[in-house]
Image 1 (tube, helix red, strand yellow):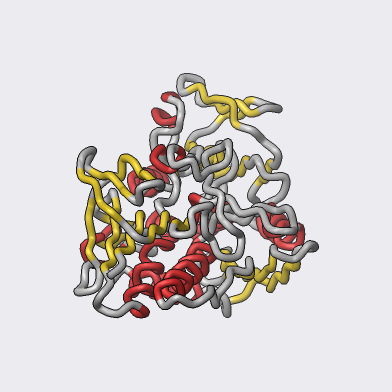
Image 2: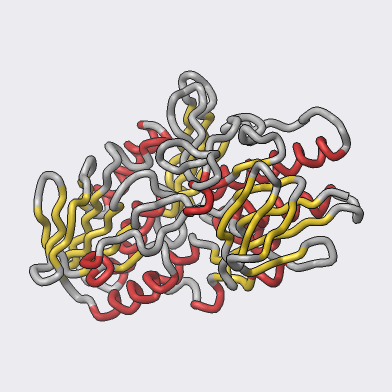
Length: 380
């Protein structure tokens, strides 16, 4: 009997758990360790802010993953000894594993400076999304700044989606004296997807009256003067929405499986680490394929990586060579309004990345809801 442990119950971890449960027989044990009681489908944060979702519909209890084939432990991992195949949680309880999938995502809370936490609202937290929604209903004029504090950040298009959805939200209410400004450290929107998508998003932002400022690096915020300082200017704001700095969890950094910045090093095709029984998937990894462009941290890539890791563990248990490899082909649906979206498909594993961008259409927007249904199914 083998014991497979998955750390993290987000998009990557839950997908891997369900894939393994469907492949393994009952002689094997499968355990998920997740630090939070509730996990969220983060695209719903934008819908919550703009009134298309209620708070109760944004997340699911982790306990719903528990079945006859999956054990769920709600606890914070404190340490992993990859030499001894041992994982520690609750500061004292060791657990042995035969195979380990690390999918803890990234830490996005507590990485801000005090002034930013005091005056701004975190777009990537449920508390931030609720606060933004409340602020919008009080606002009739003024300047909203949406910014990413640093790179890399997960789901890069979310920053631009939020700006486009807010532009529609204010326009429908006739509030034409609200100025929307996006400040990003990227040189073009969703830079990793290539210039075609970047140009499409720039055009859409211009059409909606959203001001875009690229290559802008956050330096600090003055809550008293209500100004944000970037490398090139100081900008005043009435509402500040930010994507915080992303960091790998400390216990991942301490495994010895990471690069100098703490991101996990994995084989770009099998997703194995230097230990053949330890896999890294999702946002915690840094994968640089032949194109030289680091893979974006997106839910789509996380799902595909989860299926590859699950298949390869199943092959090992059957004493067979890997029969599934990750190939860097993925897509993205970017909402531009409440009923339209643009779609993108790309292959970053080519030496010259290939990207196809489909124009804004009503056809693509339902795809977001299908993705949400898949996420809910995997967490049920």
